[in-house]
Image (cartoon, rainbow, N blue to C red; front, top):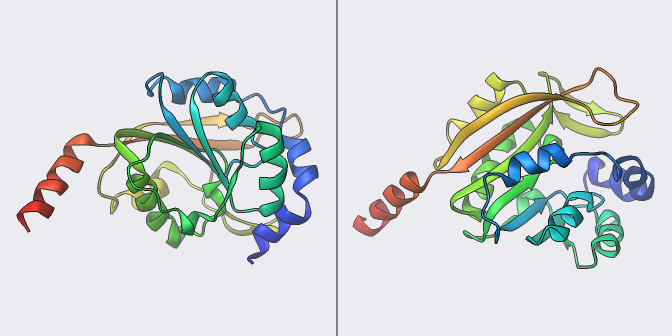
Length: 209
């Protein structure tokens, strides 16, 4: 087990208490604006289950997933359904979701591995599906407060996404941290779409091959 997962397993309750009341309603709505009312959402790295619960209460179908077994236990109780205990590397869905919500979760993946994870997410999305993800803003990579972090700027994000077939950037924007004790911390938020046209072209190539 890596150090970051050990951190969350050992501090799951205190971590959840510190994040569960963060008001991300505006960000969630910005993401939901791109989805149909009947969307199936993957909450990837769901942590406390805060956002899963909100999506469920709004009538969406939600699959919640986290790599920390202790967070999964607490989040399962909170949202009233089982949370899948899987790491990002174990993501193996095939065109199952209209939306993937990865709020402050993919930032724990090493920079050189992020392109591969984006490819897995693209595979998990249906054509036209949308991913929201957020990263601390900057170019730092390494251990911070007992966990591994990869910070991103718009430029670093573009380099990661260029090799990923089927993803297009809809928008990027920078936000302030929503927690009371994090004044001055900035986040890079990104919304990506799995292109229908690229998916069709790939399918045609596979058939012709």
